[in-house]
Image (cartoon, rainbow, N blue to C red; front, side):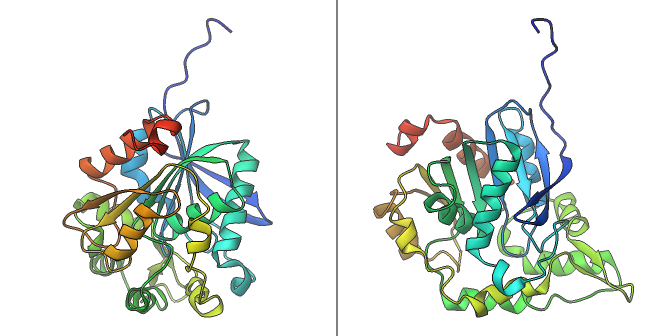
Length: 298
C-alpha cells in the first residue's frame, strides 16, 4: 500500500520463542522485520542479552536476532546434554532458526562459542547463507590453559543469597570483557540469574554445558572447516586474550578466508562490543558489500 506507514526500527528488544530441532529456543529481536537479517550469537555461558548495546546501535539498519543457545538463558535445557551441547548441534539449531524465521541469508556476529558456531555453520549447515562473519575472540584451535580457566568458573557456578552478590561474582569472572558501566553490569546480573529451589540464586545456564570439553575434546579444533571458508571475515581480539593467542589470530589472516584482524586494548577474552571503537568496527564491516568486504575494502 502506497500510504502504509513505514515501520520504525525497534530499539528495545522483543522477546520471542521458536522450536528448533525439537527444542525451544528463546531469542530477542531488534529492528525492522523487513531489514537485512543479522544474527548475534553469544559465548559459552552467556545469553543473547550480552549484545544489547551493539544491537541497539545497529537496530536502525538490521533485523537483529540474538538467540539464547540451548541450555542458556530462557532457552530449553537439553535432555541429552552429551549429544546436544556441541558445535554440530548448535550449527543445526542455527539452520533451524533461520529456516523457521524465513531467513535465506544473514550477517553473523559471534562472541567466543558464538564465533566458533558461526565458523562451523558457515562451512556446513549454513554454507553460502552467511554473507559477513564477525568472529569475536576465538579461533579454530584453543589453548588448554584458557579452557581450564573457563571450566573453573563455568563448570560449577556458585550460588548466592542475593543478586547483588551474583553481580559481584560476574564482575570478577568477566573482568576480561573490558569496561562496562554499572548499568551494564547490573543488566548482566539480572539477565543471567536463576533462582534455585533453596531460594539462592546462580547463573542462568545448565552446568552440563561444559561437558562439551569432556565428551567432545576436539570440538574446537576446526582448522579443516576454517580453511574451506570463502567469505568476508572480521576477526576481533582482546589485546590481552588468553583464548585467542596472537599466533592463531595471525594464522587466521593467512589461511582460509584470510580474516581482517583488529585487536582492542584494555580487554582480554572477550571484548564486550559495547564501546564506540568496537561498535564502529562491526558497523563498518557489516555495511560493506560482501564482494568488497571479501577483497578487504573496508
